[in-house]
Image (cartoon, rainbow, N blue to C red; front, top):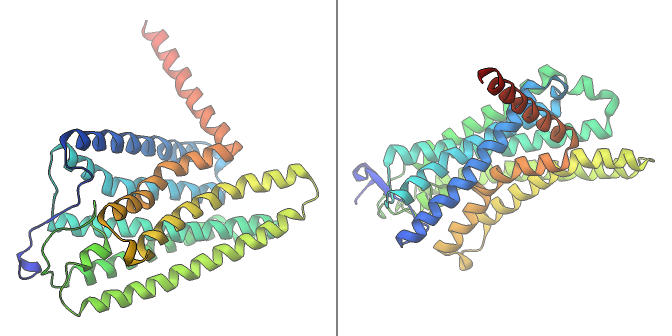
Length: 318
């Protein structure tokens, strides 16, 4: 294939070669996907329906769950379909769309996690100014800024990457369309433009990471000064889930993009990308629901209400 104009489809990396393992991969991904849909869907519905949860922290959590649903829905169904139908293909337009949408959701999620660390910092370190600094309008503006910046970032990377001449074949060594593996197909020095853009994005991401770390240093210093054990426990219960989600997201993402080339291999790239793209959206609802008693109680209240309504409906029908 001489250039990108002759490429009509890409070949994604398969998780397995044998039919039995392909079906195992399909059922495994289906279970993870359904768990992510159920967990994030419950969080979104609970926060939307329970007026006690209409606070900045839960507003941002609702946004996070929506982003998790979007990111996992962008890559997992296609991978499941390829395993089920024993194929590896994805159209050129489908690859570009998947590339853009996934990058948009991932960038928005990282921006939102940074905002959520600021929310926890203000709530614990400056509680008297919480209502002023994080009013409803400010929260909407910050969430909109996260989504808008992510859209612009994804648009720039997608336009830049897919404008490159691709003459190294059409085999993407990943189970979804990802920046490093698309760049490997380019044979033009113009790919350095995308490398430069990646450098700028990495610098911004590092700045967000430093902000998160500094925020939590200040948070833990303030929490340790709280005299009552109950107060410290309540503060930690709202901070630790967010910190766990940030740690999971950042550690897997950094290893996926910054691991040394000497240890890179298709199988390792596959596993690492699975850890940062599929695992966090499925685990985030579990992390928040286990550590946040208020959210856990609200979820159980919602489920109990649904069960009661179903029983009453069945009784009336009978």
